Image 1 (tube, one colour):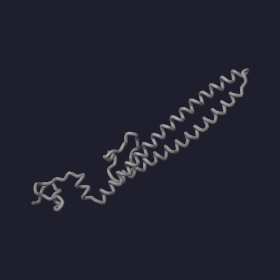
Image 2 (spheres, helix red, strand yellow):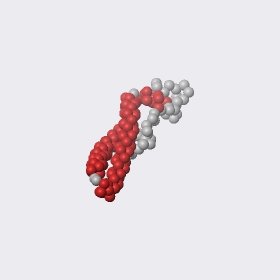
Image 3 (tube, rainbow, N blue to C red):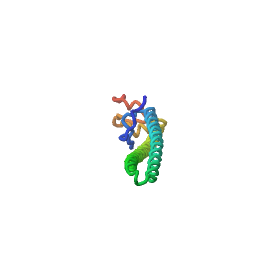
Image 4 (cartoon, rainbow, N blue to C red):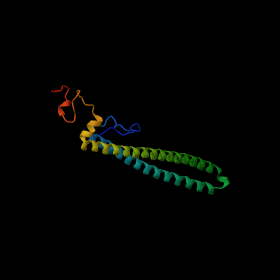
Length: 159
């Protein structure tokens, strides 16, 4: 009974997302969001390691290029091109890290909203009469008191 994959469009508001029908569904959804956060954190770590490697390689090549003499000019051009390629990879890795940070922040906010929904649903489960008063449109007949006569929920009045 897992919920669908979490997407950027699942921004919770005051309403429960459509695919959530029970507390169990909501807990599955929260669990899926936590797993998404975990995957993003792992991707972020991998990108940071990649970023460190690319930065180190760029700096190494910069140092090597600085030590070349003028008569090694063609070698400098080759190194410069490689360095520019590494700089582009570095910029792309930084951009991906920023994207992951934004996605992680979104999911953390999503989790906060989902935790509030779980707390509300748990309260509603513990207080069913209050939940019914707030969320269920009951069929009542003139003069019937729905909270003292349980049969007033039926389509026909027995009196």
